[in-house]
Amino acid sequence: MSIRFYNTINRKKVEFEPITPGTVKLYTCGPTVYDTAHIGNFRTFLFEDLLKRFLIFKGYKVYHVMNITDVDDKTIKRANKEGMTINELTLRYTKEFMNDIKSLKILPADKYPRATDHIAEMIQMIQTLEESGYAYETKDHSVYFRLDSYDSYGQLTKIDLTKQRSTERIINDEYSKDNPQDFALWKAWDDEDGKVFWESPWGRGRPGWHIECSAMSIKYLGNHFDIHCGGVDNIFPHHENELAQSVSATKGLFVNYWMHSEYLHIQGDKMSKTLGNFHKISDLISEGFTAEEIRFTLLSAHYRSKLNFSLNQNQEARTAIQRITDIQQRLFELKDSAQTESPMPDEFEEFVAALDDDLDTPKAFAIFFGWIRSMNNLLDKGELMLSQINGGLEFIGKFDDLFAIIPEEEIVPQELYDLIDKREKARLKQDWKTADKIRNLLHKEGWLVEDSPSGPKVKPKK
Image (cartoon, rainbow, N blue to C red; front, top):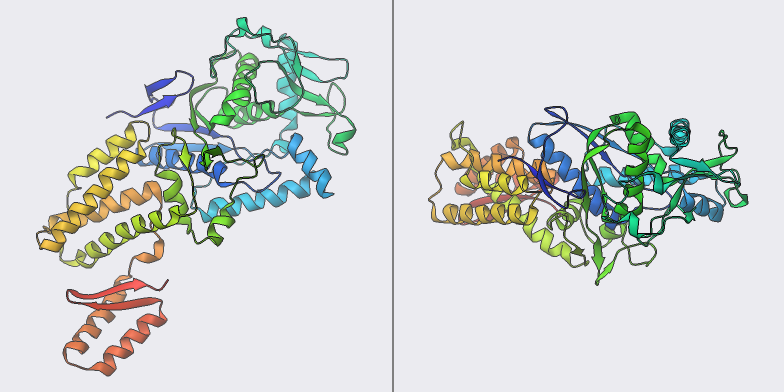
């Protein structure tokens, strides 16, 4: 089955075909590093991680660029408030972000370009737009994109520009209403900017937010690339403006597939710093979540569905992950007697087909956990065939390659089974001294042994 993704610009699912066979160029809007990223942001970053893992799973080579926005209205305002340089502020929160993505097992991007390292490219693009009649300089030496010069404006948001009044200008990086206006490409320096400025053909100033992503994505991925991702809050104005200025500057195609994840809600409200109803990754960990439980919670809903979050969801995630590790352990204990090669379960093909259909994670999870239930039934009845063991373990491995929710330490190293076997033989001989010695050794290595009617069970210490 071919892959189909929901393309925001088409408002429907379309078949995915990369520009270059076998290779996918992916750009994802990264954090604005004026503060710690919250889990609403990480819902988007985890969706993008799943997308990337799935494309790799399907055999594509993925070249991934994620920008770091280290200059905009918010970073300057926060740096001034904290009495810090903008570089000091953004380096602090960039480091926090990198630590968070590592702790959540998010695959790193190939490039993390910082906006402040690419001012020259932004100035060059603005000059190109000005020379082509798409931009104009104002009396205060700011430069704006001329909306009425671009007939296709509104493709992402489906705004009909002919019915809008676009004669006003807006200097702010972000604005919430679907009110298209000429937007700033270059902002002339003012007192509030303090020491934050760069020299340009228009005098001292700094770039607008939207031009940053255009310049950096084109530098590293070329004028035309495959997929551009972000949250639904990026669609307007950021991605709409980015699309307009990029196409105008290059006179060609820009992005083939635009993919956006929905909001994360708390008690019915969108999670945001403005509303003050947000959680950081460190908050969740202090509440008892593991990285795997966070991943499970944020990935189990479809990326285009709103997700209501609550702190008690960690128990649901913990139970689900335990079901996976339990069946994995049961199969792993039988692995030595299994056939060398085993076919994948029939459910695996259905599982992949669900993900082929616009990353339908709820359906994929339902298929996977249904398979676990049937495997446990077969194991309990002693009806599991040897040919099903390796295939089952491979299914679990493929599942975790995509979702990364199995704690790495849950698999018992093979060498420990020799000790477990020796202990079991000692118990059968009623050699309690040897059995206790081996139990203590396993405990020292971080493992608990539980005796059961079906034999010893070993689990990591929590």
